[in-house]
Length: 154
Image (cartoon, rainbow, N blue to C red; front, side):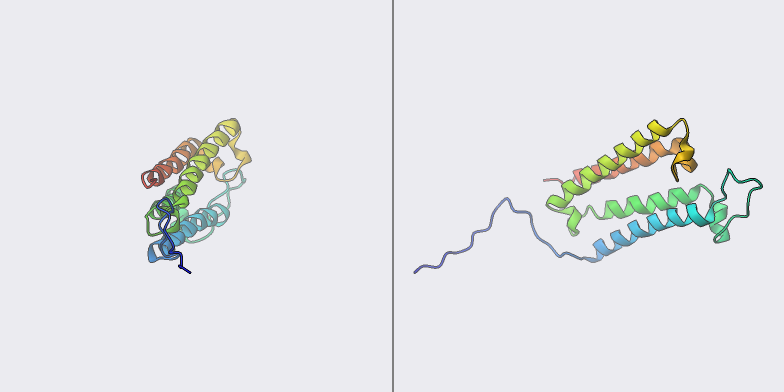
């Protein structure tokens, strides 16, 4: 009886290590970016609707940065997503590229559409109220990160 040799499927995506240093750095940047924004919004910022305005919480340097905290947080988030588009990470190869690309495109589109729907009263949603028109930059930023995944699509 002859043994059948396994033939590899030429269309199957290349497999790589599940966890690489690049993947762990990307995850760390994404988590730190989200945590930075959440911490600033809940602890560090001064509520503009409070009368009299309270003292800023959190570390002094964070209160002094004011709206720049959003740039730092979203910048870390976007950088982590861009790093995760590398082929040595699970999102950078095979179906992960499509998931990352479509995910970023749809999040960006949803961010912009949500902003336009609530633009008459942005105080209804956290973070949207502080960013104002800068919400468009966030939505476009997610779409730009989606294009970094699109360059890896085969």
